[in-house]
Image 1: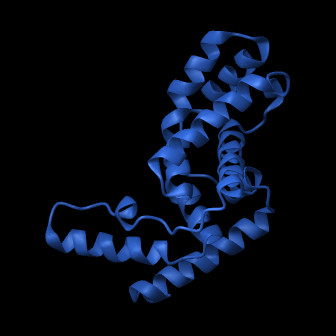
Image 2: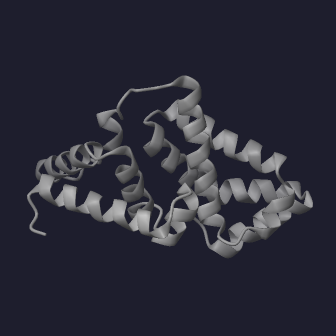
Amino acid sequence: MSDERVLAEALAGIARGDKEAMAVLYDEASRDLYGFALWKTGSPDDASDVVQEVFVRLARTRAPLARVARPKAYLLGMAHRAAVDLFRVRRRTEPLEEGLLLDGGPGPRECLAAREASLAVAALAPEQREIVYLRHFCDLSFAEMGAALGISLFTAASRYRLAIRRLRKALGVAP
């Protein structure tokens, strides 16, 4: 995601009613929000719905946006809550599609390693999979993960530590 300063300025602009600020925020944050939502939902259509819901909620709750201290964590937290709301409405129980996690490298050896790693990540508990995504794809700190997910810093760190331990075991990597 973009620089926190750019995101903060865009949120402050939305709070003031600046319509251009919403466009700036969309340009700066929508790709990462979509990636997180796709990771969380496993469905491109659901991920698009989550991103749309985030921006609808931003437009409705303009006033408090000027006081957001950590814009990246705030936006990812909104995406998390929108995805949870979507699951509650649809009561989905489908696992992530295997193909969404795969990242084929340049050769067969790399593809095999990517496939093995993707399957290991997919086998994690949803809370651990989410923490791994936020850490490695969104580059959030444990404090930011906690703020985004509504959990404590220590819970975020514990979930990450357990996830990494399970991934190492699944991939046969020494601790």
